[in-house]
Image (cartoon, rainbow over all chains, first blue to last red; front, top):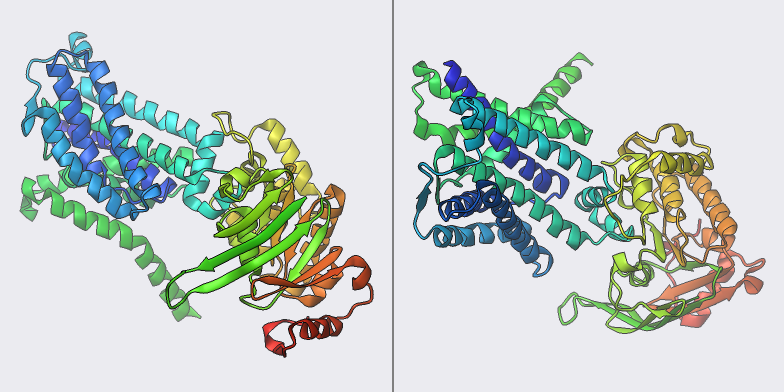
Length: 299
Length: 264
């Protein structure tokens, strides 16, 4: 693997660490399997790209993208807690609806950002090469998101959110409005994913309506790989594991695609991802069974 | 003062599995009274608790706590006034969270939750004092996960959590049923102490007639969703389990099968 490919994997890993952080919040903290992310990532990209082309300041456009993502999360949570639609189905419905929304936002299937001011422009003006600028920015944003989430989950409200996911009946008995916590958590989760989408569009030179396909699996892969590599009880460590998982996932994918003798090509990416998730999900269980069998044999 | 008036609850209405859990239940509990509730399976004990804490909404009737009609209040809105200890030690606490985080959740019960740190130095000191009362050494394990504790320890912590804040009624839902006899006795001892020290209005549901007669100041028996026996402290003195069974038979005029109620 070349240095550029290596740095590229780290950079994408950091960016999708934001997605993984959102997935961690919905799947792990709220216990809400949320597929909205496949729609909220391109939503963030579409909103940011359209606004930037429309003359908005790139930072304001990125913030607007986060608000749009939060709204998408709110819709999914609302379908679930107010209308009583099964969480998984509620998220699929929002995801499908967002496909149309994204086309409408851009008015076309993609929105290029050629020659536009982006959040990277000030860093590039400092004379930093492009790949270093984006690496630094993703690192800073990822770190900030991690620290804010760490802090939030330790506050009274954050603790109430964790209880909502872990034991909703107990949470209600302790006076926690579990519906409100689900709404809030899903909004935060999807705003993080939309932020990733907005940054992705600005670093890739445009938004595309199909850029969200399979994002949920990538995010889930990062969370699960992270948990396998760095099992954590503490939130502070768990959020590090999420980013670690995301970077490891990217490196594994880059290695697989770069190893010519395996004969894998770029179009095999989604299949590799799916297989990786299955392996990461079943490996810990298989290891435990193997150990038990060995101990059983010794006794 | 807790008042339950003519409460009706039907599960799965209009279906073949329709169950009329409560059929016009009336119950008044004066402030500071410890009432024990007995009844066979399906008599409506659990439903009564669920109606009091807000998990089940009655289709008819009224629930009053103090001066407030709380019939339409959600569980979390009532939580500032109603505390509950569940039968399942797993249900009343969060095993993924630490002991101090569980206590912090209970500490905020009935208050607005903001963005302050959930556990600070002052809280930690207070929690340590509250846990020391139990004599289980848990005051030195504040950061341990709740899941590491035994069932009895978890029920003891649940009791502390329930009584951390002022409350109008304490609901005990067969909270010793899942414990071994020795641990159950310990938890009941704690319960009596907490209720006495706090002068708490308490409703304890139990499967054991013995336990019902040995604790509190009044015993109520439910059958088919109604109160069929109401024995006050005066009448309870010297009352044996067999007497209670006989009284019940007289009221209902029917034979009560032995296995539907535990005599122990």
